[in-house]
Length: 224
Image (cartoon, rainbow, N blue to C red; front, side):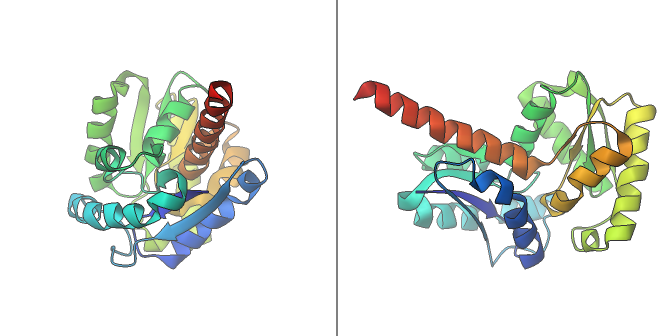
């Protein structure tokens, strides 16, 4: 059985980054963890049209993996198709945005989100409103870098540090959330640079998925 992390975009760079971020979790998980992608998806999910367009292929991919799955993780910070996949699947389904936000709220009173683009922010506001946690948000500020731009390490880290400093010092964020699965490799360095917790969403979702699998196994054991 496997925890499948489904990257709804078609960027092999992003999928490989997610897979590398999962390596420390594999030793803690009772089942395997595998990152896959939607090859017909866009190279980066940057618009509402992208979010809406990947739902159907995401559901098809998950359906094909259902028999071997212990859990699914939707690895896009817009959590596309999250409710639909929960309706379709009998397995636990985690979204990286929802998981990151819930994790951040255990680490501090107010969290800040580092988004890729300004046009990402309204989508995040709708999600936070639906979750009922907007009062815990310090601010959501963009790097103004697209998904493909995140591979430029110097430029991306410079923007993460600058925007993260603003979230911390101007808006009072105690915890920062990386608002894109393409930022996986920057968490530790950013946390060290800013001296505050930084939540990487794929890691947060993986930790929750491992917990859900362990909980299900514990329940099965008690029911024997």
